[in-house]
Amino acid sequence: MLLPRRKQKTDTARPRVPPSGSLFLPNPKLRLREQLREVMRFHHYALRSEETYWFWIRRFIFFHNKRHPKEMGPAEVHLFLTHLAARENVAASTQNQALNALVFLYGRVLLKPLGLLDEIPRPQRSVKLPVVLTAEEVKRVLAVVTEKLALPLRLLYGTGMRVMEGVRLRVKDVDFGAGHIVVRDGKGFKDRVTVLPRSLEEPLRLQLERTRMIHEADVAEGYGHVYLPFALARKYPKADQDWCWQYVFPAGARALDPQSGIERRHHIKEETLQRAMKEAVRMARIAKPATPHSLRHSFATHLLH
Image 1 (cartoon, rainbow, N blue to C red):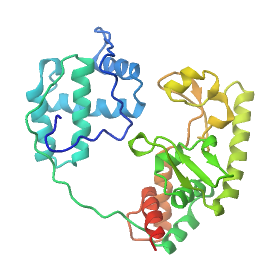
Image 2 (cartoon, rainbow, N blue to C red; image 1 turned 180 degrees about the vertical axis):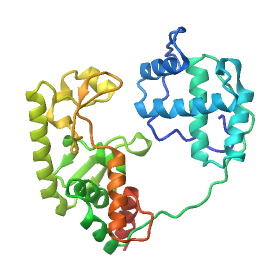
Image 3 (tube, rainbow, N blue to C red; image 1 turned 120 degrees about the vertical axis):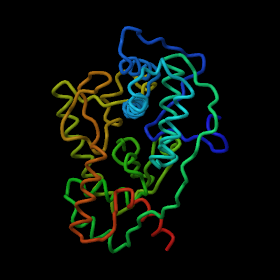
Image 4 (spheres, rainbow, N blue to C red; image 1 turned 90 degrees about the horizontal axis):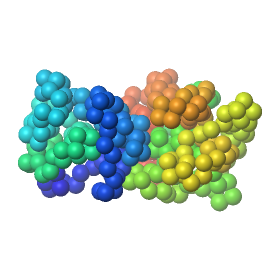
């Protein structure tokens, strides 16, 4: 392991480790940013991973006075990671993100694997209690959320889903007959089943009717495509227009996919729910730094009472 005594954590943007035998040589005429993009897309990393990895690579380059990574190696990587822990006091997970980005850069893009690094100072992990709202506070918050975003937030509280799990929910994963929701690719890339509250069944049915109308209008205009994971897109090339694969909470407008260049309708943004929650907490006059993720913690806490 690169970091002694602690298990590395992958970043939160769905990183995947390609098979050891797979190798892609980036175009040497391209700049480093484009080379990184080429390799990451060859290995089907998420766009969020691309952005996260480049952020840390750029930080690394500027830390060493804009030297090209080809001119540096394990010693400079060790110095940078030590700086993050000792001077910037970043969290351990943040330091791991930087490490993952640099390991990928040297091993997959520059083809100069870092190998084993000397022991790196680790940030001290602080124990923080999550923000939990009372049942009454949850009611007050959800009562003042705009109608358009009330259902996604109610769903987070009623099911215990994480924010990205909620916005990425697809039609096929809502099972009214069984009274549950299947959460795909949750933490640790695992699927799980959670309860579908009866109080949300009717609002969710109405939401699906609105979503179907949007989808049918898109199809009539020659669109109606939705993002599918690479393996599914390759196996079922026409499935991206099927109703069952559509997002339950679609975005207000279509947009070009930055990876494929295809015009699609994505799901609502995570930031949209975060802003709505922040405004609702303010309007409800609750003196807690609650976020949409607080609804998940509140769900778990209230189940215990």
